[in-house]
Length: 432
Image (tube, rainbow, N blue to C red):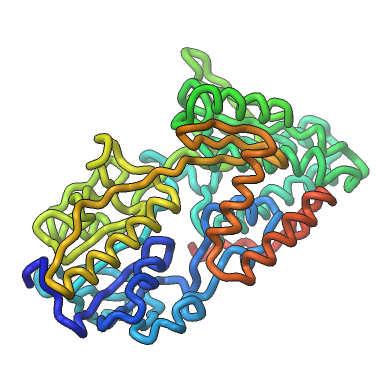
């Protein structure tokens, strides 16, 4: 197939129902194409708010939407609940977990990333990351179980181990988790226990570089650090984790090693591409970066295979300012809309100029009334940045009922300081 030509009734297969895959499917609505969206989950997850599930502010249903419900008006779109286990680019087929072969004329991969332990995968058992709903529920269990265990512990040293929370990684996820846990200890749990004061909790944030939120301007990083300190978070910068075992983390700063006893260690230090990138590289010879993300062409296709596109967090697009685009929702959404438009153009035998990302800025929340926002032309912090963060996340939620429920929940939490979803449930990672 000439990359500028695409026939009507051509088969477009999208793998991944996150921002990238979903917005591509939505962009192909009412086209004469046969679209198939494949995901191993039956829902779209609004990942920017995953930490709020992990800290009891929201329930899983508040930030998820069934894919079939979202796409039910796309009469040309079929949704399949499967995992992709192989790709045959020369035959233009993918193989799913029931060994069924699914043909395609255009393939779009948007399976995202997961947490990265930099060669120390054994740490995951002791320090869960935050990539999916199961992770969020596991973290929620650990955080709230720690307070319950502290209530039953009479030995002050052992109790402090339960009340010590260590977050590894000072990026947006780490900052959000640290701030949320501090607010749980300072506000949400106030007066809930009889044998200890939740304010005795120690929240430690470990960052390997010299400041938290490294991609942000230094003045916003400093503001975020100040706000975290005001919440009672202790920040360790220029600190490298050298080992994690059950209830213990070892941190090196310079030549000094410190061993910290904690029953709740959380990982927010890095991401790596989903396993499909390795399959794609083996089958096509495409290059991967150090995190396993696929190096894409200016039009988001891959070298020598103009009918295969990789978008969202799974892709490394470095054709703008010579650095990879960040793994955030606006990038995935813009790339999805571009690919959908490009496919429509190919139906007419036309093409598009290279993809260009329009950066409207970045935001990170620290706590109630506390956030930082970098809009390039202006840098904000405090209440205004927090309000913009709230508004933007409501806007990007997929379905109206999610928008309404989350808005009402946030308003209620704002005035009550409560966290109504602080449930402790069975271990959700048993079969992971």
